[in-house]
Image (cartoon, rainbow, N blue to C red; front, side, top):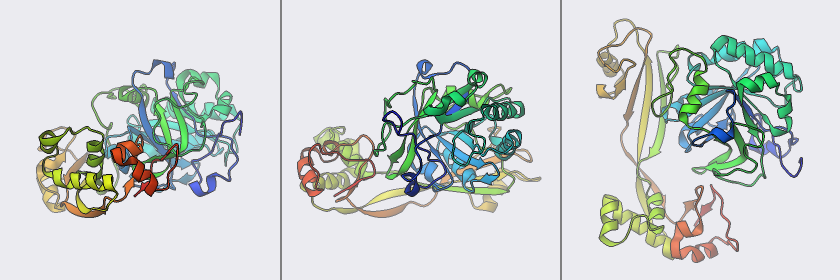
Length: 426
């Protein structure tokens, strides 16, 4: 603990082991963009950074504007990085990819990183993670310089540098002049969701801040939580760097990388009708009253009101919620292929659900990656509304309305009635 602040390393170890680690260095990524600091951001973005110990689907199941994925640590490779990256892109998130510095030859490590990420160059933010743990070069500022310059030489992109605010001085001034800093500093280790004004944000001139390793989103955690002091266009400018013809426009992700395999498959499950969330919104007054509420809830009215009523009196309601499985597949075009033939051969119909680089389904070329995005059969999942998983920003009042006091009593909560994201209430 330095100056009353925890500086925690977190990318290598599972949460179970974090509390035993020496408090030294959380990750800071210096996005190599000269002059970009918190003060010039027009719109902030909330996101997460993940490593190999986390589930492959983590980047698709939590709400985030961006996700930064660990690719390697020297010669060690995160076996889930491609899936984590693809899931982020396929759910409309901006993407970052990082190399955790191992201390091996800096040029060799930079080359290994660039070789691995291949088709994502120009589409994802590139990051060096500079920490003390298992990094034999820690304290050697020239190692950072050599790695950064080699990545730029190979890609025409200035990478970001991540480190703890306690060791920002190790980043050479010439690197800082090109690269955005991603700094890490935690006010405490309390469970939290996204924060609109993290403690001490921007104090080191960083363009991005990691402010917690105890984040909980959509019931998943603990997670590293970050805020980027800019919008999607700013993110993409960093990702594009000095590359010619690189686009920073559009919405959603910047695109997926080509893969050597003929087909890859990524499945994500999204709740298309979250009845519990609708019930919370009704209690907050967001759906009006009487006929107005009935009209706005439509076919979900009876089920939602059953949940609302059960929350108010503490009873149990058992019902169902509709879940749609969204299936995404990519396919690398071979000689003689047509979109129609591929769709029928793989059983991925209708043909109109396919997307091709040219925008014309009749115009594809060998080696291109085409993408199918469609919905599988709708299923029904049982749930009990007597329990509720707390989400970021919720309070007892927003969940239970005038029944909040009874809910506090049922759950053994006392003043100041603090609840945390991921906590289950009954």
